[in-house]
Image (cartoon, one colour):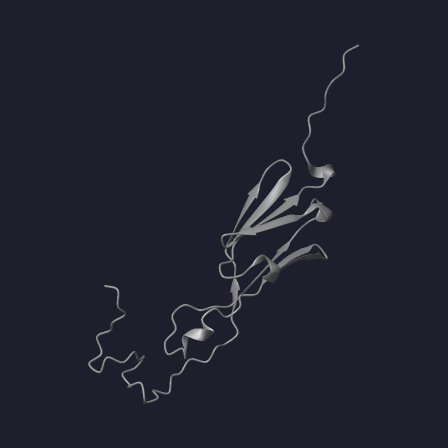
Length: 141
């Protein structure tokens, strides 16, 4: 089980039955692909937290910006397997990630923080002081 094997009679890895020396006309050409990163959004009394799955990128390749009440997340995914040879069959697409969210005035944009680890981006958006619920103490004389 330690060997890479296939069931072609000529024992060549192909995508359509052509031998290694033939061209099947379906050589894969890398197309630019953008993916909509899947997210979960959590809310507490003081924050919103956006959790986004972004496998294959790195913290240096992620850009997060806020402009005109729009939070935008972009992440570049660099090619990983270029040294393996010519791609003959592809089922797993590799591409960049993009996601945008409209945020209201209730977010303290200056306090937004982000962390990336194990393929998951976590963006914390603190609520502005005006919208954070607070308990009013009643004084007694």
